[in-house]
Image 1: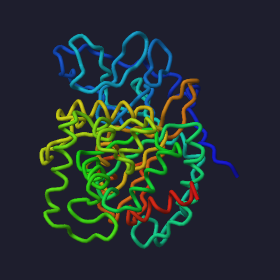
Image 2: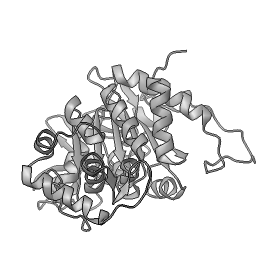
Image 3: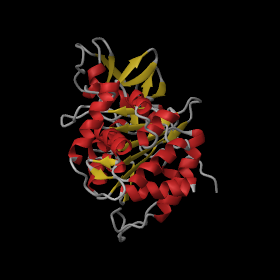
Image 4: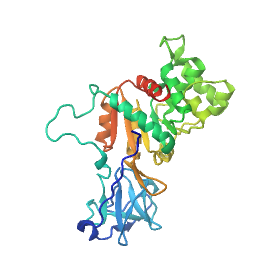
Length: 363
Protein backbone atom coordinates (compact mmCIF):
# COMPACT_ATOMS: atom_id res chain seq x y z
CA UNK A 1 0.00 0.00 0.00
CA UNK A 2 1.55 3.37 -1.01
CA UNK A 3 2.62 5.70 1.78
CA UNK A 4 0.54 8.77 2.54
CA UNK A 5 0.96 11.21 5.43
CA UNK A 6 -1.32 10.95 8.43
CA UNK A 7 -4.43 13.09 8.10
CA UNK A 8 -4.53 16.11 10.38
CA UNK A 9 -7.63 16.56 12.51
CA UNK A 10 -8.02 20.21 13.45
CA UNK A 11 -9.67 21.16 16.74
CA UNK A 12 -13.44 21.41 16.85
CA UNK A 13 -13.80 25.13 17.36
CA UNK A 14 -17.59 24.79 17.52
CA UNK A 15 -17.29 22.92 20.82
CA UNK A 16 -18.63 25.08 23.65
CA UNK A 17 -15.29 25.44 25.44
CA UNK A 18 -13.61 26.86 22.33
CA UNK A 19 -16.57 28.59 20.69
CA UNK A 20 -17.06 30.75 23.76
CA UNK A 21 -13.39 31.46 24.40
CA UNK A 22 -12.17 35.05 24.62
CA UNK A 23 -9.56 36.50 22.30
CA UNK A 24 -5.94 35.85 23.24
CA UNK A 25 -4.14 38.72 24.95
CA UNK A 26 -1.11 40.32 23.36
CA UNK A 27 1.22 42.74 25.15
CA UNK A 28 3.95 44.91 23.60
CA UNK A 29 7.60 44.16 24.25
CA UNK A 30 9.10 47.09 26.10
CA UNK A 31 12.68 46.34 25.01
CA UNK A 32 14.44 44.51 22.21
CA UNK A 33 14.93 40.86 23.11
CA UNK A 34 12.82 41.00 26.29
CA UNK A 35 9.33 39.49 26.43
CA UNK A 36 6.54 40.97 28.55
CA UNK A 37 5.62 39.31 31.84
CA UNK A 38 3.47 36.17 31.58
CA UNK A 39 4.56 35.57 27.96
CA UNK A 40 3.37 32.36 26.34
CA UNK A 41 6.20 30.00 25.30
CA UNK A 42 5.48 27.93 22.20
CA UNK A 43 5.85 24.15 21.86
CA UNK A 44 6.46 21.59 19.10
CA UNK A 45 2.69 21.11 18.63
CA UNK A 46 0.17 23.11 16.56
CA UNK A 47 -0.95 26.17 18.52
CA UNK A 48 -4.01 28.31 17.86
CA UNK A 49 -4.62 31.88 19.00
CA UNK A 50 -8.04 33.51 18.95
CA UNK A 51 -7.79 36.91 17.27
CA UNK A 52 -10.88 39.01 16.56
CA UNK A 53 -13.05 35.96 17.07
CA UNK A 54 -11.05 33.74 14.70
CA UNK A 55 -8.67 30.92 15.66
CA UNK A 56 -5.32 31.42 13.90
CA UNK A 57 -2.72 28.66 13.61
CA UNK A 58 0.85 29.78 14.23
CA UNK A 59 2.96 28.34 11.40
CA UNK A 60 6.70 27.64 11.39
CA UNK A 61 6.60 26.89 15.09
CA UNK A 62 9.40 25.77 17.38
CA UNK A 63 9.65 25.16 21.11
CA UNK A 64 10.58 27.81 23.69
CA UNK A 65 9.82 30.77 21.45
CA UNK A 66 7.24 33.57 21.39
CA UNK A 67 3.98 34.08 19.48
CA UNK A 68 3.92 37.54 17.91
CA UNK A 69 0.87 39.09 16.26
CA UNK A 70 1.83 40.97 13.11
CA UNK A 71 -0.05 41.83 9.93
CA UNK A 72 -3.05 39.78 11.06
CA UNK A 73 -0.98 36.60 11.48
CA UNK A 74 0.69 34.86 14.39
CA UNK A 75 4.43 34.43 13.90
CA UNK A 76 6.72 32.33 16.07
CA UNK A 77 9.83 34.29 16.94
CA UNK A 78 12.95 33.64 19.01
CA UNK A 79 13.59 35.90 21.99
CA UNK A 80 16.71 37.26 20.28
CA UNK A 81 14.58 38.45 17.35
CA UNK A 82 12.01 40.27 19.47
CA UNK A 83 11.82 44.02 18.91
CA UNK A 84 10.40 46.74 21.08
CA UNK A 85 6.68 47.14 20.38
CA UNK A 86 6.16 43.60 19.06
CA UNK A 87 2.80 42.25 20.24
CA UNK A 88 3.54 39.08 22.20
CA UNK A 89 0.92 36.52 23.28
CA UNK A 90 0.61 36.40 27.06
CA UNK A 91 -1.06 33.79 29.24
CA UNK A 92 -0.05 30.26 30.16
CA UNK A 93 -3.34 28.37 29.99
CA UNK A 94 -3.22 26.21 26.87
CA UNK A 95 -6.73 24.72 26.90
CA UNK A 96 -8.39 27.57 24.98
CA UNK A 97 -9.93 29.17 28.06
CA UNK A 98 -7.85 32.31 27.52
CA UNK A 99 -7.68 32.27 23.74
CA UNK A 100 -4.63 29.98 23.41
CA UNK A 101 -5.07 26.33 22.45
CA UNK A 102 -2.26 23.79 22.08
CA UNK A 103 -3.47 20.89 19.93
CA UNK A 104 -1.45 17.82 20.94
CA UNK A 105 -3.42 15.03 19.27
CA UNK A 106 -4.06 16.27 15.75
CA UNK A 107 -2.52 13.19 14.19
CA UNK A 108 -3.39 10.67 16.89
CA UNK A 109 -6.29 9.10 15.00
CA UNK A 110 -3.80 7.65 12.52
CA UNK A 111 -1.49 6.20 15.14
CA UNK A 112 -1.75 2.63 16.34
CA UNK A 113 -2.25 2.74 20.06
CA UNK A 114 -0.40 0.62 22.59
CA UNK A 115 -2.47 -1.82 24.65
CA UNK A 116 -3.96 -0.39 27.79
CA UNK A 117 -2.49 -1.43 31.11
CA UNK A 118 0.74 -3.28 31.77
CA UNK A 119 2.76 -4.67 28.84
CA UNK A 120 6.37 -5.65 28.22
CA UNK A 121 8.75 -3.81 25.89
CA UNK A 122 6.78 -0.64 25.28
CA UNK A 123 9.97 1.39 25.03
CA UNK A 124 12.60 1.30 22.27
CA UNK A 125 16.05 0.00 23.07
CA UNK A 126 18.92 -2.06 21.64
CA UNK A 127 16.70 -5.12 22.18
CA UNK A 128 13.90 -3.77 19.99
CA UNK A 129 13.44 -5.38 16.55
CA UNK A 130 13.52 -2.67 13.88
CA UNK A 131 12.67 -4.63 10.72
CA UNK A 132 9.29 -2.94 10.34
CA UNK A 133 10.88 0.46 10.97
CA UNK A 134 13.16 -0.04 7.97
CA UNK A 135 10.23 -1.02 5.74
CA UNK A 136 8.24 2.01 6.88
CA UNK A 137 11.23 4.28 6.37
CA UNK A 138 11.75 3.06 2.81
CA UNK A 139 8.11 3.78 1.98
CA UNK A 140 8.33 7.18 3.65
CA UNK A 141 11.50 8.21 1.81
CA UNK A 142 10.15 7.12 -1.56
CA UNK A 143 7.14 9.33 -0.93
CA UNK A 144 9.22 12.23 0.39
CA UNK A 145 11.57 12.22 -2.58
CA UNK A 146 8.64 13.44 -4.67
CA UNK A 147 6.43 15.20 -2.14
CA UNK A 148 8.56 16.33 0.80
CA UNK A 149 11.77 17.84 2.08
CA UNK A 150 14.14 15.41 3.81
CA UNK A 151 16.79 16.82 6.14
CA UNK A 152 19.62 14.61 7.42
CA UNK A 153 21.57 15.50 10.57
CA UNK A 154 24.90 13.66 10.59
CA UNK A 155 27.68 13.00 13.06
CA UNK A 156 31.23 12.20 11.96
CA UNK A 157 30.80 8.42 12.42
CA UNK A 158 29.23 8.30 8.96
CA UNK A 159 32.53 9.45 7.44
CA UNK A 160 34.78 6.89 9.15
CA UNK A 161 33.85 3.98 6.88
CA UNK A 162 34.20 3.66 3.11
CA UNK A 163 30.92 1.78 2.69
CA UNK A 164 28.84 4.23 4.75
CA UNK A 165 30.35 7.21 2.89
CA UNK A 166 29.50 5.59 -0.43
CA UNK A 167 26.00 4.65 0.74
CA UNK A 168 25.09 8.15 1.87
CA UNK A 169 26.61 9.67 -1.26
CA UNK A 170 24.41 7.28 -3.24
CA UNK A 171 21.32 8.52 -1.41
CA UNK A 172 22.30 12.11 -2.19
CA UNK A 173 22.71 11.34 -5.89
CA UNK A 174 19.42 9.43 -5.94
CA UNK A 175 17.52 12.46 -4.62
CA UNK A 176 16.79 11.31 -1.07
CA UNK A 177 18.69 14.18 0.57
CA UNK A 178 17.26 17.70 0.35
CA UNK A 179 19.61 19.19 2.95
CA UNK A 180 22.44 18.08 5.22
CA UNK A 181 23.10 19.52 8.68
CA UNK A 182 26.37 18.67 10.43
CA UNK A 183 29.41 20.05 12.17
CA UNK A 184 32.97 20.70 11.09
CA UNK A 185 33.99 17.10 11.89
CA UNK A 186 31.63 15.29 9.51
CA UNK A 187 32.72 17.38 6.54
CA UNK A 188 36.40 17.36 7.52
CA UNK A 189 36.70 13.61 7.90
CA UNK A 190 34.61 12.93 4.81
CA UNK A 191 36.88 15.20 2.75
CA UNK A 192 39.90 13.61 4.45
CA UNK A 193 38.58 10.25 3.29
CA UNK A 194 38.52 11.45 -0.30
CA UNK A 195 41.82 13.36 -0.10
CA UNK A 196 43.95 10.99 2.01
CA UNK A 197 41.80 7.81 2.14
CA UNK A 198 41.72 8.07 5.93
CA UNK A 199 39.45 9.41 8.67
CA UNK A 200 41.30 10.63 11.76
CA UNK A 201 44.33 8.90 10.33
CA UNK A 202 42.73 5.45 9.95
CA UNK A 203 42.25 3.84 6.56
CA UNK A 204 38.54 4.23 5.79
CA UNK A 205 38.27 0.64 4.58
CA UNK A 206 40.72 -1.43 6.65
CA UNK A 207 40.76 0.87 9.72
CA UNK A 208 44.55 0.44 9.81
CA UNK A 209 46.52 3.33 11.32
CA UNK A 210 48.76 5.26 8.94
CA UNK A 211 52.09 6.91 9.66
CA UNK A 212 51.55 10.49 10.87
CA UNK A 213 47.86 9.92 10.14
CA UNK A 214 46.89 12.31 12.92
CA UNK A 215 47.99 15.10 10.59
CA UNK A 216 45.65 14.10 7.78
CA UNK A 217 42.48 15.86 8.91
CA UNK A 218 44.23 19.16 9.63
CA UNK A 219 46.18 18.86 6.38
CA UNK A 220 42.80 18.50 4.68
CA UNK A 221 41.36 21.54 6.43
CA UNK A 222 44.47 23.54 5.58
CA UNK A 223 44.21 22.56 1.93
CA UNK A 224 40.54 23.49 1.75
CA UNK A 225 41.32 26.85 3.32
CA UNK A 226 44.09 27.36 0.75
CA UNK A 227 41.56 26.93 -2.05
CA UNK A 228 39.05 29.15 -0.25
CA UNK A 229 35.99 26.90 -0.22
CA UNK A 230 34.91 23.28 -0.26
CA UNK A 231 33.71 23.35 -3.91
CA UNK A 232 36.99 24.96 -5.00
CA UNK A 233 38.95 22.28 -3.10
CA UNK A 234 36.91 19.50 -4.70
CA UNK A 235 37.55 20.89 -8.18
CA UNK A 236 41.24 21.71 -7.70
CA UNK A 237 42.16 18.44 -6.00
CA UNK A 238 40.11 16.19 -8.26
CA UNK A 239 37.93 14.88 -5.43
CA UNK A 240 35.48 12.35 -6.87
CA UNK A 241 33.82 10.59 -3.92
CA UNK A 242 32.21 11.02 -0.53
CA UNK A 243 29.28 12.69 1.18
CA UNK A 244 30.24 16.34 0.67
CA UNK A 245 31.36 15.71 -2.90
CA UNK A 246 27.92 14.26 -3.68
CA UNK A 247 26.19 17.27 -2.09
CA UNK A 248 28.26 19.69 -4.18
CA UNK A 249 27.69 17.74 -7.41
CA UNK A 250 23.97 17.22 -6.79
CA UNK A 251 23.42 20.76 -5.46
CA UNK A 252 22.10 19.53 -2.11
CA UNK A 253 22.68 22.33 0.42
CA UNK A 254 24.61 21.68 3.62
CA UNK A 255 24.88 23.77 6.78
CA UNK A 256 27.95 23.16 8.95
CA UNK A 257 27.68 24.61 12.45
CA UNK A 258 30.85 25.04 14.47
CA UNK A 259 31.73 24.26 18.07
CA UNK A 260 34.39 25.44 20.50
CA UNK A 261 36.53 22.34 19.92
CA UNK A 262 36.72 22.65 16.11
CA UNK A 263 40.00 22.47 14.22
CA UNK A 264 40.49 25.02 11.45
CA UNK A 265 37.60 25.10 10.77
CA UNK A 266 36.56 24.58 7.16
CA UNK A 267 35.65 27.88 5.43
CA UNK A 268 31.92 27.09 5.21
CA UNK A 269 31.53 26.37 8.94
CA UNK A 270 29.38 28.89 10.81
CA UNK A 271 31.55 30.28 13.62
CA UNK A 272 28.67 32.20 15.20
CA UNK A 273 26.28 29.80 16.92
CA UNK A 274 23.19 31.86 16.09
CA UNK A 275 24.12 32.16 12.43
CA UNK A 276 24.43 28.37 12.50
CA UNK A 277 21.07 28.03 14.21
CA UNK A 278 19.48 30.26 11.58
CA UNK A 279 20.99 28.13 8.82
CA UNK A 280 19.67 24.96 10.46
CA UNK A 281 16.23 26.44 10.94
CA UNK A 282 16.07 27.53 7.30
CA UNK A 283 16.01 23.87 6.35
CA UNK A 284 14.21 22.44 9.38
CA UNK A 285 11.32 24.87 8.90
CA UNK A 286 10.78 23.26 5.47
CA UNK A 287 11.39 19.69 6.60
CA UNK A 288 8.77 16.99 6.38
CA UNK A 289 11.19 14.26 7.49
CA UNK A 290 14.31 14.61 9.65
CA UNK A 291 16.78 11.76 10.17
CA UNK A 292 19.45 12.46 12.80
CA UNK A 293 22.35 10.04 13.19
CA UNK A 294 25.22 9.67 15.66
CA UNK A 295 25.39 13.23 16.95
CA UNK A 296 23.88 14.02 20.34
CA UNK A 297 24.24 17.81 20.27
CA UNK A 298 23.13 18.38 16.67
CA UNK A 299 20.25 15.92 17.14
CA UNK A 300 18.98 17.69 20.26
CA UNK A 301 19.38 21.07 18.56
CA UNK A 302 17.43 19.87 15.52
CA UNK A 303 14.77 18.35 17.77
CA UNK A 304 14.29 21.62 19.62
CA UNK A 305 13.97 23.60 16.39
CA UNK A 306 11.66 21.19 14.56
CA UNK A 307 7.89 21.15 15.23
CA UNK A 308 5.72 18.03 14.90
CA UNK A 309 3.85 19.52 11.94
CA UNK A 310 4.28 21.61 8.85
CA UNK A 311 1.79 23.88 7.12
CA UNK A 312 2.07 23.21 3.38
CA UNK A 313 1.75 25.79 0.60
CA UNK A 314 -1.90 24.86 0.05
CA UNK A 315 -2.72 25.36 3.74
CA UNK A 316 -2.94 21.67 4.65
CA UNK A 317 -1.18 20.47 7.79
CA UNK A 318 0.94 17.33 7.68
CA UNK A 319 3.16 15.59 10.23
CA UNK A 320 6.92 15.97 10.38
CA UNK A 321 8.63 12.58 10.81
CA UNK A 322 11.69 12.66 13.07
CA UNK A 323 14.05 9.69 13.37
CA UNK A 324 16.95 9.35 15.80
CA UNK A 325 19.50 6.69 14.85
CA UNK A 326 22.28 5.91 17.30
CA UNK A 327 24.21 3.02 18.79
CA UNK A 328 22.92 3.79 22.30
CA UNK A 329 19.66 4.92 23.82
CA UNK A 330 21.23 8.07 25.31
CA UNK A 331 20.52 10.52 22.51
CA UNK A 332 16.94 9.34 21.96
CA UNK A 333 16.24 9.52 25.69
CA UNK A 334 17.91 12.92 25.98
CA UNK A 335 15.79 14.27 23.15
CA UNK A 336 12.64 13.06 24.93
CA UNK A 337 13.86 14.66 28.17
CA UNK A 338 14.12 17.98 26.35
CA UNK A 339 10.45 17.80 25.35
CA UNK A 340 10.79 16.70 21.72
CA UNK A 341 8.41 13.80 22.20
CA UNK A 342 7.70 13.01 18.56
CA UNK A 343 11.07 11.42 17.70
CA UNK A 344 11.21 7.75 16.69
CA UNK A 345 14.42 5.97 17.63
CA UNK A 346 16.34 3.19 15.90
CA UNK A 347 19.14 1.86 18.09
CA UNK A 348 21.83 0.48 15.80
CA UNK A 349 25.25 1.12 14.30
CA UNK A 350 24.73 4.09 11.99
CA UNK A 351 27.21 2.82 9.40
CA UNK A 352 25.26 -0.41 9.04
CA UNK A 353 22.00 1.54 9.09
CA UNK A 354 22.88 3.78 6.17
CA UNK A 355 24.25 0.89 4.10
CA UNK A 356 20.96 -0.97 4.66
CA UNK A 357 18.88 2.10 3.79
CA UNK A 358 20.84 2.63 0.57
CA UNK A 359 20.42 -1.02 -0.33
CA UNK A 360 16.70 -0.91 0.43
CA UNK A 361 16.13 2.21 -1.69
CA UNK A 362 18.69 1.96 -4.45
CA UNK A 363 19.34 -1.80 -4.71
